[in-house]
Amino acid sequence: MRKQLGFHINSSICTGCKACQIACNDKNDLSVGLKWRKVVQYGSGSWLSHPVQPAVYTPNNVYAYTVSFACMHCENPICVEVCPTTAMYKRDDGVVLIDANKCIGCRYCEWACPYGEPQFNETVGKMTKCNFCEDLLAKGENPACVDACVMRAIEFGDLAELRSKLGTVTAVEPLPVANLTKPSVVVTPHKHSQVSGRGTGRILGLVQEA
Image 1 (tube, helix red, strand yellow):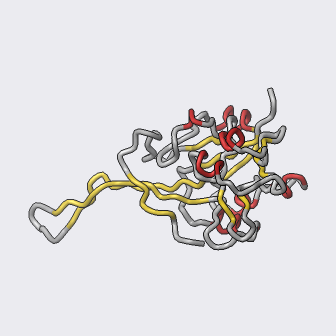
Image 2 (cartoon, helix red, strand yellow):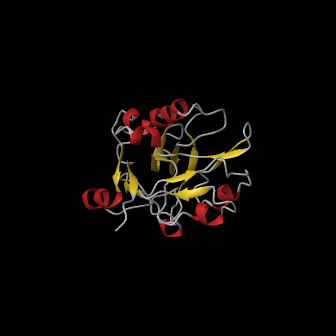
Image 3 (tube, rainbow, N blue to C red):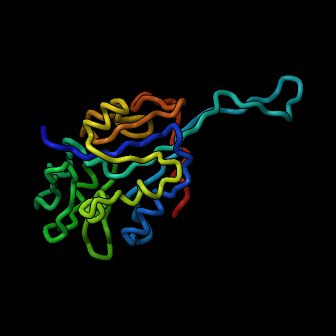
């Protein structure tokens, strides 16, 4: 079986601190508006007025959790399928990359990706996205987001090994259902996590710009 690198995202301990997002932005010198890694907060609930003291409110099924995600380097990357110039390609280790010399900035990959991860760089007129910190991998080092996470909520490695050790959950709300592209990720769900496609909450907002 061909090797497939993937990420493990431990949503049960993620605090939404954005350290992974900031590290990615800094390492890749991303311009404003581009985010190769995002931290999204999801939740729901309401507040009920106390029956005796109306000015006092109590929580009613209130919950929230955060999910950090970037390009999923999918096992079946639809971005690769729709790219008309073969600029988008998948390496032998499963990492999905963009050949900037072939990219014409048509944005087909962005529109096709259920995660919206390929992003258009207006300055150069090309598509960009998480490259799994390929330069750091080549030196035997960790991706920037992994080292930056203060809670150690992000890991990476061979997908088969991650699944054997950490389980097979590949999607929780608000991520799209996993059968679309088979994302190369293992998610440790938060205790309030809901199944993708069957959530009762909503995105509470991207954790503030970084």
